[in-house]
Figure 1 (cartoon, each protein chain N blue to C red):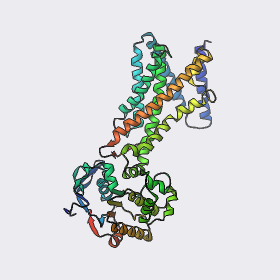
Figure 2 (tube, chains in turn blue, purple):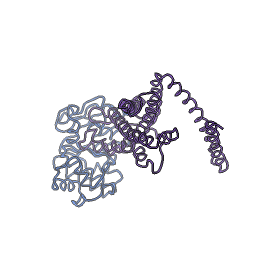
Figure 3 (tube, each protein chain N blue to C red):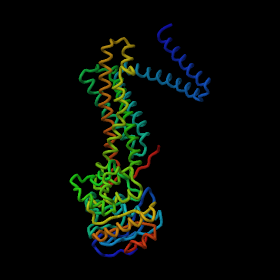
Length: 209
Length: 253
C-alpha cells in the first residue's frame, strides 16, 4: 500500500504486529485522510482487524510508526487517542442498560441534543435512546456503536466490517450514514471484504495483502 | 471398646455403607469412595503425627505453616493458569492476609500464643484464603475472556484500563466471597461449623465454642476479601500494559 506524506489525518508506515507468536502484519502502511471514506480491502483473516486495533493502540505494533496529524500516537495519552479516533468493532459489544446509557457512558454531561445528534448521524431515531441495548439486532447494534463513538466527538472513525451479517438495505443505510459523516469532515476508514459495498460508498481504497 | 477404636470402626462402617450403595445402584464410583476414604485415613494419620511433633517442638510450626502455604499457592496457582507467574501471585494473595490475621489473633490474645493455637488458626485462614483466591481468580480470568468485547468497548470510549476492568473485578471479588458470607449467615441455623463442633466434642463450653467460632468466621470474611482483592490487584498489574492496553489471555476451562 502506498502511504502519502500528508500529515492531516492518520498515517501508518511499515507496521509489524505479532500476536500469540504469529506475525499478523508485516510492512503494512495506510493513510486515512480527513473528509474522505477510505476502504481497507482485504479478504477475511488478512489482518484488517489487527491493523485497526493497532491504530488505536489496542494492540501494540512492534515495528513501524503511526502518526495522527503528524504526531506519533505513542506520545499521546491512549484515552485521548481513543476519543479522537473512534473504533467500532465488527461485533460491537453493548454495555449494560439502555442505548442512552451506552451513549452517555463516561460523559455525564452529555446533553440530550448531542445525544440525539449522534443518534441521527447514525440513522437512528431519537426514541431509540430508551431501547434496552441487549435487545438490539445486529444492524441496530452496529449503528448504536457508531453513535456511541460519535458522542466522543472523534476526528477519525475506524469501522471493522460494519456491514458483516447485514442485509442489503441495512448495509445501504450504513453507507449513507458514512457519507453523511464524511460531509461533516470526519475521516473514515472502513475495513471490509465486501467489494460491492466498497464500490458504492468509499472514496479511496487501500489494499491489505 | 475405647473411643479411638470406636471412631475408626464407625468411619469404616460408613465407608462400607457408601461403597455398598454405590455397588447396589451401579453408580460406578465405588473405587473412588474406597480410595478417597483410604487416602483421608492415611493423610489424617500423617497429619496427626506431624501435628503431635509440632506440639512437642513448637519451632516446627513455622515449617508446618510454610508447607500449608506452599500447597495452597500451588493449588490456587493451578486454577488460574492463564495468569503469568500464577503460583507466586496466588501464594502472595493467600499468605499476606492469612498470616497477618493469624498474627493479629495471637498477638491480641484472642488465642494462646502457642503452636497448639497458632497452627490450626493459620490452617483455617489459609484454607479460606485458598478458596477465595481460586474462586476470584477463575471468575476474573473467565470474565476477561468472555467479556473481552465489552472491556474493549469501554477502552475505546476513553476508559483507563483499570476503569474498563472494574466491573469484572467487582463481580469476581464478590463471587469469591459468596461461600464464606453464606456460611456466616447460616451458621447455627443450617450447619454447625467445624470449629464449634470440634470444641464441643473436645469438652469446651458451648459459650466458649460459639465465641471462638464467631472470631474465626469474621476473621475468615476479612481474610477472604483481602485475598480476593489482592489477587485481583496482582492480576491487573500483570495484564495491564503500557498505553492502557490489556494483555491477551488464554485460559483452560
